Amino acid sequence: MKKITFYGAGSDLGVHINGASLGPKEILKNYNNKKLFEQDKNYQKSLDINDLKKNLEEVNKFNTELYNNIVNDNNFCITIGGDHSIAIASGLASIKKHDNLGLIWIDAHLDYNTFETTITGNLHGLPLATLNGLNEDLRPFHKGNFFNPKNTVVVGYRALEKNANLEINNIKTMGVTVFTTNDIKEMGVEKVMELALKIANNNTSGLHISFDLDVIDPNIAKGVTVKEKNGINLEEVNRIINILKQQSNIKSFDLVEYNPLNDIDKNTLGIANNIINEIK
Ligand SMILES: [Mn+2]
Image 1: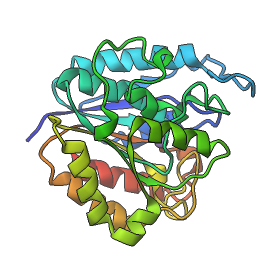
Image 2: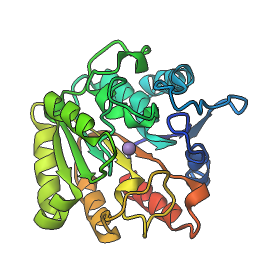
Image 3: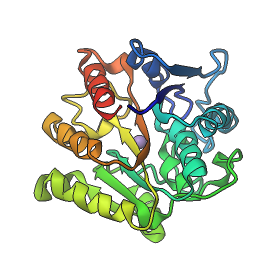
């Protein structure tokens, strides 16, 4: 059996809505071998609408500590968010250890803004671009490789935010492959995952997987911070996880954006725990 460390990344510094910072404690309640990190309770988050680098210093402080811990951990690392900005630390730590990894980003959003294209300044909208080597200010702790955009795949995108064109332009320019929720509905989840794995595995030595719970339909998984309607259903989630389980080269895994404050029926907590129990 593989040795696992669970990292609880209790930060919602990357978004103006509170709650995701409380997620890891809930999800990891009954797990051993965990390290919990919490954001500074006395820190006041920026609510200035003109601030396009919201809580940058604090996000970097949090991610530096998380990164340094994961980099020095030879176990299989499962990182539980927190908002998706914590994946800057978990993803870069993993590629620091494994040198050349493909990346599958399962998410309703692209998370591909730069400081030039973000209109909210919420840094949880920038991590994927950062993992591909953009947004230098968000990764002062990392000296090493980035994920090659040619081996980076988004699965489940469907959000049409106000600045979507700019974000889509960023991701197209970099050469990342995107499969939408519509692609999943039309081609089937097996075909999409087959193609995604082929792209992410092409000349790489392993995979990092980042799973954002908001990819699931918000009628099923209410406990997320930014809901996007018309998501994938539970059967599709189970089939994705089943396919991932069969891959022997996954080096690290994130599960992010669980927000207990919105999880009124506790359904999302159960889904999150099921995913971890399958992956571990
Ligand atoms: Mn995300």
